[in-house]
Amino acid sequence: MTRTTPPRPLDVEALFPDLAAHRGTTTRLHPRPGRPGLSESSVGGPVLWPADEPWPVCTEAHGRGRGRRPEDVRREREVWAAAQAREPYEGLTEKERRLVEELKREHRVPGASEDDPVPMIGLAQLYARDVPDLPAGPDGADLLQVFWCPFDAHGPTGYGMLLHVRWRRASEVTDPLTAPPVPEVVGYEGYVPEPCVLHPEQVVTYPFAGLLPEELCERIYAWEEALEEAEEREDGDEEADPVGYQYDLSIPPGWRAGGYASWHKTDPYAMDCTTCATPMHLLLTVDTSEWDGGSGSWTPLEEQGLHPSVAALPTAVVVGNHGELNVFTCPADPAHPARWSVQ
Image 1 (cartoon, rainbow, N blue to C red):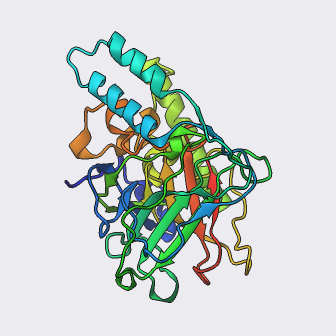
Image 2: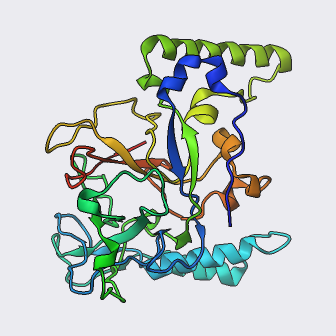
């Protein structure tokens, strides 16, 4: 089913003609629940992986012997979905409540050591034919596959995530793996994606304001402040949300490929390739929500009127504190290691 982004609330280039020089495109992936196949782009679906190639694993030393079972995470979601579908909604029944309490239990993996290989979870696979803004892969590769470790236990803080990004030529996989390994337990339920098919849509995008030329950025900020003051005087309602560059006119929310990264949490910092020092480009954004109260103008036309808690969380992925993950690639050589930032 098609997903269509509404026209922007106003023509930002008419207000700021200088922005035309910075106009770009990004592909909103619009993941929605479904049953994707091996030959389809998807989030949380089956991954086209050679049967004779080792599955990605995490071998970094960290606790992995205790957590929730992936099947319990998915079963709990099914119980909640069934309850929310009932009219009128009255919450869980007593039987469902007891079941959810049982499903939320953590389990131990007997004999697990700090460096046992943990199968990584297939997060997404994107075929270049489906995603216009997907950056080019190395050596003619036309399939991007992204995996992550199901534990928050990496990086300098010991609470970061670990990704594995793999490019391949889809036509070379003639004997695909049919039963990939899965972790016995996961450290965080937000690492367990629900299978989603994609409905790619290319839209116009502009850079994060802080990365624009200083004079243009200042004009945008001044315009936003004036708009807020005018709406407060007119409505007497300080809670009203006026149109803003960040949330309505520049970078769409949700899963997307290519375009510009948002830096709303940390402010921009250099994302240069660790191999060749080339400034990296955005490869993929993994978002907790497809839209929310602050970015509701991006709600697809086909889903207008639906509540975000029902329609805007199709993948069940949760990034950090309900934020987004930006994955970057080296434009000089896509085979160089990817980098990522959580916003």
